[in-house]
Image (cartoon, rainbow, N blue to C red; front, side, top):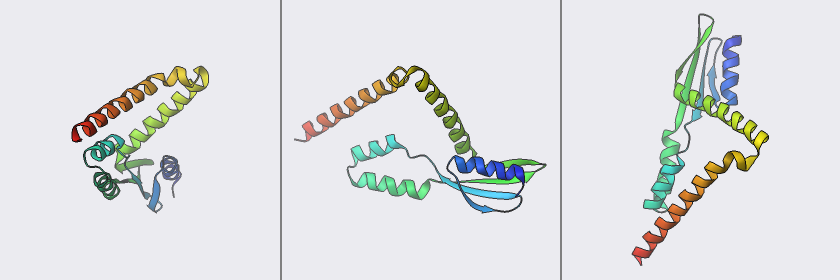
Length: 137
């Protein structure tokens, strides 16, 4: 395997991709698209039990992502689900930056907006659940 291709495959493996097939000048890797927790909660809320199971089956059936790499003019060309690779790379950079901020300023000083939004959304879901269960009785 060429050095450039090997380095790119190693980067993708670090992001969670699994090599499916490799040759001297090509490689294909598989992974999964991210799980949509908001859609899962929405489906579970409106279709208790069976909705969640159906969404899990749907996600497993449709979330496979593939990236193809090949060497062209001493460079590595990527094809396939490249949006997912870009998204993962951007998230990794943001994660590293957030970890640096947490180390410098402390957890609560950095994460309070996310914690506040989570609490508000949790309270909203509880109010909706109470209204839903109260009107069913």
